[in-house]
Picture 1 (cartoon, rainbow, N blue to C red):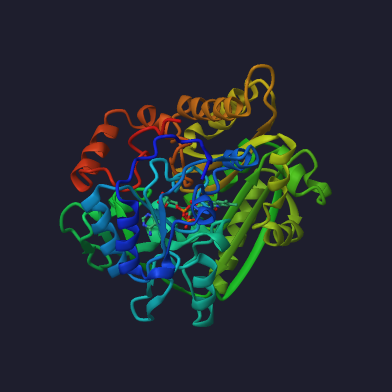
Picture 2 (picture 1 turned 135 degrees about the vertical axis):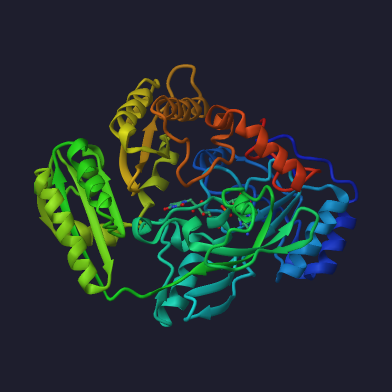
Length: 484
Ligand SMILES: Cc1cc2nc3c(=O)[nH]c(=O)nc-3n(C[C@H](O)[C@H](O)[C@H](O)COP(=O)(O)OP(=O)(O)OC[C@H]3O[C@@H](n4cnc5c(N)ncnc54)[C@H](O)[C@@H]3O)c2cc1C
């Protein structure tokens, strides 16, 4: 095997044959692979620049072996073997993460969780569902819908992401303004720790019983343990769903409409505000939105509540001179909300692009948008920088930026990519924003952990050292920068 691996810190594994034999004894012959095709398949996630590396015949990182365990007992035994040999373990959901968190920068054992895909229990009285965390988001929705429920977590990567990946990246779905983000939906979990032991956290609606350590696993990106089971909140399938769309002349008017709606404790499930560039890109069919910011609201739940929510949205939009665009933009949003196919055509044409989601308090919202766009425009070769506001709180907002360009002069495509990311992070931190709202840190944002957290990063490292003293769980992420 003679592959050009980008992250060159791959550890030496003594007695790889012996390791593979042990893993096969645990998971079964057919569920352990060192085949080149499998190692390459698990060399990356959906971090966008890695698609370019693949075209350049480069492999981001390379595991030594891939294992597909069947249950948490096998996961525990696999981690015990890794702990005994001090070998990296990389949990892998569906590889839809966009920051490189599942890339095995030190090699090791990639543990694909897809076979842990069962719904264990649905409890109508408590409104909870217990699942194995390898289950796919869409598959879970289908099962729950048949029984008359939903969890309300619908990320754009719904068809290609697992519950474990949602927890590990503290994900946010499109309907999150009503149902909450994954941290609001998650109630308890089972975790295989770095020594292979299994820990269950207790299920309760709320408790005052000491620090809530299980919250550590949210956004831990596989660095503290493997989450094998989760109890999630359920809701009855909504009685009614209806949307409205308004076009606004300025960010100020659009943001103010949403802020004032939420201030009244009215929570439309979906709220999206697109800047002029993205309105042109996504809603070119709507003449009333030409040169304006399209804003889409979807309300759902009990019919009477939906009436109230829609009435409040209409009232506040009218106060901000919003132009009623009717239902068509809402239908268009539903039809195209999972469609990202245009992006796969850009990399082969040498366009370097990515998306950057960040959050800030309301008072900083207008400045953050302006600062990030201004910083990104300074990068030589930048052709496009735009955003929509995608998630909202009574206290603040998440902006989702997209940049695209072609590297010029002495800048390589990787240099352009890094410069664009640095620009977005500088613009965000200058505006008191947080460097990631829901995609996570992975490799892409690792160098911005110190400016983001300051001394708190050292506290995180102490927790990591306490729970994983030999640094076997997904090393090279969150607390250190993966060097090429
Ligand atoms: C087109 C597109 C749209 C997207 N839209 C959204 C969106 O709307 N909202 C959003 O939040 N994200 C979105 N994402 C990002 C991505 O889908 C999420 O980060 C998702 O949660 C990752 O899940 P996964 O199962 O694919 O995880 P993976 O990519 O396989 O892994 C991600 C991280 O989680 C760890 N991990 C995986 N499973 C476990 C486990 N069981 N225990 C411990 N650690 C684990 C891995 O080690 C890795 O660090 C999008 C991505 C794409 C490509």
